[in-house]
Every structure is written in structure tokens, then in C-alpha cells.
Length: 294
Image (cartoon, rainbow, N blue to C red; front, side):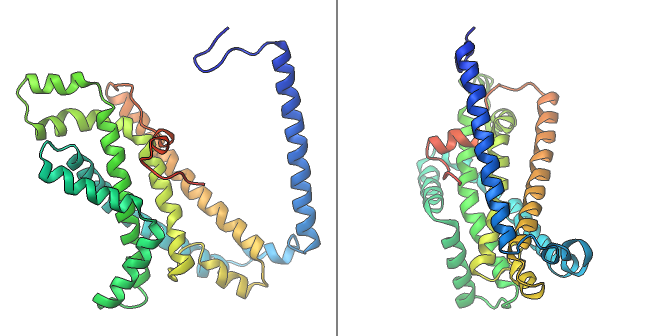
């Protein structure tokens, strides 16, 4: 039996696959055992290093929850600005007018090629030199600015790819009934392209949430990851335990985001007929539209 992606494995191949699985699980178990034993030797599994997260509510109310709020706030502001800006830039790249298409393409390519951390650093220095922002809110503005500039350019390419993935008959039909380019984009192409763009857009929203940590690393933005310094300083150098808890919070936050997006996508697909086209992040990475993330 043959599938679209691969041939059905025979008896020998199935036995090899089972053997590979057993060997992999054995190696994985050895690695986990080695990591845990090393942590135990370094006293990183001692109860006093983990108990504050269970027994002391102050570690949550003073450090973790405020840090989580700053992460969510920066990500939410960036998403609210980057989504419409990216959509406008993506539509601009498809304009029939060169005086619109060329400068928009230059802006998108420039900011898409810049590392987001470098954009944050430039924005921070610009706010220092040319604004009267107070020092305590300056990191938030710099983080949001960097995230918006970079992710809006990436979202622009996602929007452009989503629209171009639609069958050409959609545009031809709209032109045949006398629709102008703006009407065709608003009422025909964009509504159908939404379902094709959603997987890639959700991946980019997860990237936005994670990239807020860059501001904490170099700009002193008091987001979730930044709080590990204060926690380890106040609770006995429990770096491993703190980073583990922070990692779990990031995983939970991104899981909630992707779950909501999946629910929204299913409702959209049930509510209207889809073209069947899907733009995912892997295809965009292969085509150089977005940078591959580790």
C-alpha cells in the first residue's frame, strides 16, 4: 500500500522501526537519568530550591505574576499594532501601482532582514535621545517597537503569500463582475485567505510572545524571564528551579494561544467554505519569507 508521502513499510521495516524506537527510548532514559543525577549531585533537586514556588505566595505575587503580566502586555500591544500594519504592508506589496509597491517592498525587506534584538536596541537608543519617556517605561516602548517593526514585515509576507495561494479564478470572477482592486481585495480575496494564513499567523504570534524575553535580557524590561534574577537572589541561587518554572509558564501561555487559534480556525472553516490552501511557517521558511527559529 502506498500513501501520498511514503510507501507502507513491510515486515522488516516495521521490525526496524520498533528496534529504533526501543533504542531511542533507552538512550533518552539514560540521558534523563544522567541529567537528574548530575542535578542531584549539585543539590539542584533539593526541596528548599523548589519549595518557594509551592509554599511561598510572595514569589508569585512579587515576581512571577508581574513578570507574566509584562510579557502578556508587551506581546498584546505588539500583536494589536503589527497585525493591521502587516496586513496593510502585505496588500501594498500586491498593488498595481509601482509608487506604492516599490517603497512598501523596500520597507518590508529592510525590517525583515534586521534582527529583532537590534531593532529593540536602536529603538531604545532613539527613545533616549529623542523623547522624554521615563526610564521605567522606556524598555517597554523599545520592545514593542522592535517587535512591531520586525513582525509586521513578516506578517506582510504571510498576507501576501496567503492571497497569492488562492486560485486565480477568484480574482478573475471578481473582475468579471466589475469589482475594483480594493473591492476585490476586501470582499473576495482577504476573507478567503484568512483560513490559509491562520497557521502561519499563529506561529508568528507565538514568536512574538517568546521574543519579549530579548528585552529582559539586554534592556532591563521586567518581563517573565527577567524575574529569574530577582528570584535567585532572594531564594538561594535556585536558578534551575526558577528557569524550569518560567519555562513551564511560557509553554502554558503559548499553549493557550495556539489552542484559542485552533478553536478560532475551526469555527471559521465551519462557517464558510475554504479554498483548501494553507500557508504554514515551514513553507515560508523554505522560501526565505521568515527566519527559521531554533
